[in-house]
Length: 114
Image 1: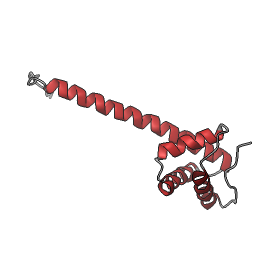
Image 2: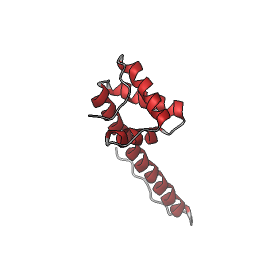
Image 3: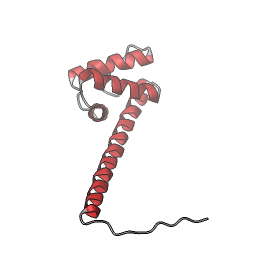
Image 4: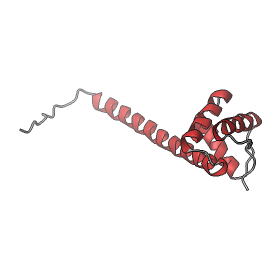
């Protein structure tokens, strides 16, 4: 059995409001995907440099974000920049070092990748 929907005309302005809402939702989803990609790249940096599990890398980034009151995607951008030779802000570097040590059992503090 097939159920079909009857198309009814929308009241004036309803279509414009629906389109605006969908455009906003689309923009938010794009931003979420972009942010997720940055976080994934930062996790990859931590996995490669500190030989920790990806889940531990995410937990470490999240912990640094919470302890420094910096958004997660911003911390991730900083870690990617660090991998490319940029300096980390002192507080982020300290928190990241502690987070990595807790998860790896090693005493490595983040330094410039070799």
